[in-house]
Structures are given as structure tokens and as C-alpha cells.
Image (cartoon, one colour):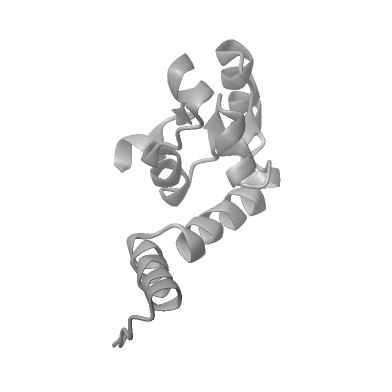
Length: 115
């Protein structure tokens, strides 16, 4: 966590196969939750975050955009906070467990009591 937070940028770069298959890596969620702007070379990942990440399929351009963003972080702090809240409210372990429980309850008439 400390390494991510102290880095200039923390991109979640994916391989060609991952990008083509629409794979969404956990790294993007971790980087954002640690307070770094999301950088990705995957259009699918960017769409998941409503196109609010820094995106480019060109890695060199992606890193330049990320560094430009970080050098203006005081102006861009609200964007990172918004993304952090989005991850916290929608993409945590508890969110996923509740999604699965709701799915089972709604689609298989399984009565699940939450505590």
C-alpha cells in the first residue's frame, strides 16, 4: 500500500489478451482505494468506471497523461476522491457477497437472512 501511495503513478496495465477479452484486474480497484488515480490501457476497465479513468491504449501516452494528472493533483483531488468512494460503495468484498446473496434470493427463491 505504501509503495502505491508513494509512487508517481500506479497504472493497471494489461496484456493484449486481457484487453481483448475484457478482463478486469483487481489491481485497478486496489490502486484507486489506496488513493491513486486509475490509469488503464483497457477500454473495458475505463467503461466500468464511467470513463473517468485516465485511459490510452498507448502505454507511453498513458504514463504521460498520468504524470500530467499527478503534477496537478491539487486540482484533480476531487476526481480521485470520487473514484475512491465509487470503489468503496460498489466494489468491495462485502458488496460482492451481498450481490451474490441477493442474486440467489431473487432468482432461486432462497430466503437469506442478513445480519
